[in-house]
Length: 157
Image 1 (cartoon, helix red, strand yellow):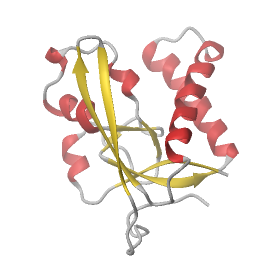
Image 2: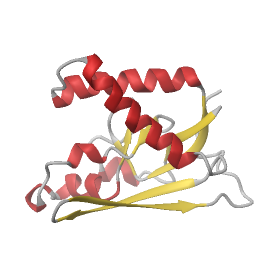
Image 3: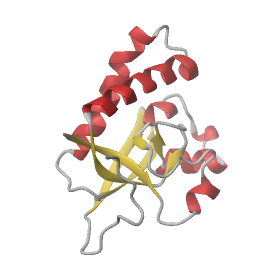
């Protein structure tokens, strides 16, 4: 079984800073592709926060400040890949599901690889900034402490 990132909330601030906010428990990826053609002029208000610190939830396609590493089944990985490919067609105009599937699979695989060496309940935060030629992403990892995050992190079965 592999691992993946799951949306958590440590407080209600995501509900105020993202439009929309991702739901607790949904699987998430970086989602930097959503900003690939953005300029400084696009970085205002809630869009700025989504760009700077938002993980992309794969159910609502809302954003979240924190994700936690959690086990994921192969069936869930397949479903996420299909859902992301459909999102690429519906939202970004990919020509077909067949064309979008390899790109979606790459995004999903990247998140699995990012999570594979971390213990369950490890928190991750993303930070982004625009550069002259693209987006720079940095990921910060916060190891689980003695007190578990089970009260916050929702894990699949």
